[in-house]
Amino acid sequence: MAPIDRLPTELLAAVFSSLRRIARTPPWVRVLLVCRRWHEVACSSPTLWVNLVCNNRCTIEVLQILLLRSASLGLTLSLDLHMTDVGGMLGALQVHVGRLQSLTLQFWPAQLDEVARHLQAVSRAIVTLALHCLTDQAPVFPYDPDSFPSVRTLRATQVLPRPRHSVPGGITRLELIQIWHAAPVEDEHWQYALLSTLASLPDLQYLILQDALPPCLAAGGAGMRSVTLPALRELRLSETIEDIKLFLHYITVPPEARVTIVARTDGSMWEPDAAGVWLTILPDNVAHNLPMIPQSRALRLFAGHTHKGPLALSGSGLVGQGDLDEPAWAIILPDCGEILSDAVFHALDDLPRVVPPTSLVHLELHIAPRIFIFDVNWTAVLSSLPHLRSLVIGSLWKAERVVTSLYQHSDLLPELQSLELCLEEVSADPARGPRSPPNPDIPPRMLEKVVVTQADDAPVPYIQGTMVGSMIHSEHYEFKHSWCAACHVSSAVFTAGDESSSLESNESENGLSGWMYPRVG
Image (cartoon, one colour):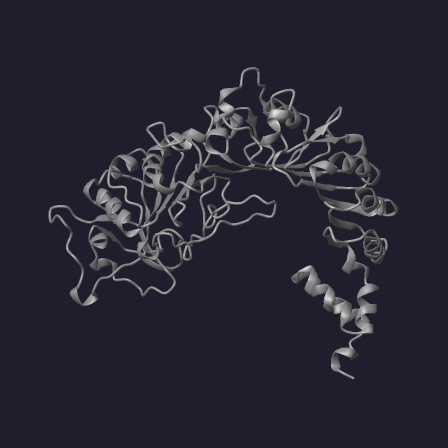
């Protein structure tokens, strides 16, 4: 007898459970084919069958067998209903209606009415409901709140749930994805319906919108009423840059809410200009509607780590190690492309208009080496932020310009204590000794602490032998091995049409793509 055959049934079932968690469905179910004992152990372990994903080749009979194997445990079920018997598949769930907790349905537009009709009979205990219509038309789904008394999470992709009479107030998470197409088929403007729907959800804690606002929303707006979401903990928007500002003008969220905005520029008519970058997105009443932004004490700007030209600004009301790794808010332009340099130029000018200069004490500027912004007046940029106590700057070329400004203007950033240089490469020969300052009449700028951060494989640099090092001096130097997706990516890495070395956008659990926040530190 093989050693694995001597395993107790409970341990073998635990092995299958671990395999079920880490493997996709096809490899996992192959354990049923190994031998009779494995088949019996797997089929008699209800916990292995509480999370079912069934494609459109699953028959009614197979579905019934799978449901029975989960015994009386709570069910999480995903059904692909296109090209299936909708009534038969959903009818198979009726005897399990009391334990059906999460249901995801994919269907064709022609099946929509049938899905809505049969779904009501099995929806009593559903807590999470996800609807995905396989079309680009985003049809209206007739949603009867009385049939879904337990729903707390509602996710709709390419389909617009339209309550027949009232909205179920118990919903705490709402995700609307790719439904702006529904606007032409609505009797009233979709934007009004969205705001009124949100207003009727006082317990809403998570709001995720991706391509859910109609294009060129700024053309309307008369008669729209503001909505306050007092319980909101997280707001995520992924929309075209022109469609965001007016929506944010009518939404008020609490200061403790976390806000992430992805403003796509590809295909839009937007170009950076004197009006700014962040102010193109943020509403004029940002202090009232998005209070966490002007309350920020720390900012991080991140630009240019892929060919798509991402630009991101994030902030936090706290100042400490790691606070900007999980920021209170973030605005991401994932695809600036050829206009990235102009966007960075105007984004730097925007900073004191986004956060009051009197409150900002920590600033990080991570700008890729390949971004050339020769016209930036760094002295003017920094002089608008007089209370900075710590500054992080990268890459090397930008660090040289900033340090030069600090060296030439001793009254610039008078409260600055710590300077961190996030550099892709530092080359200086220690045998030659320290380098003299550029101007013998101007002594190096004194700082309490200087930190040099380089990529993981870089040697400890001799910073005193560089141009940057000659203009600053500190009693406390610190060297860190780290990795910054912008500052530590050499411009030589990027060749035309080659994305192999760039970082890809992260795909979030709710299907929103582009929440790029590359590793820093």
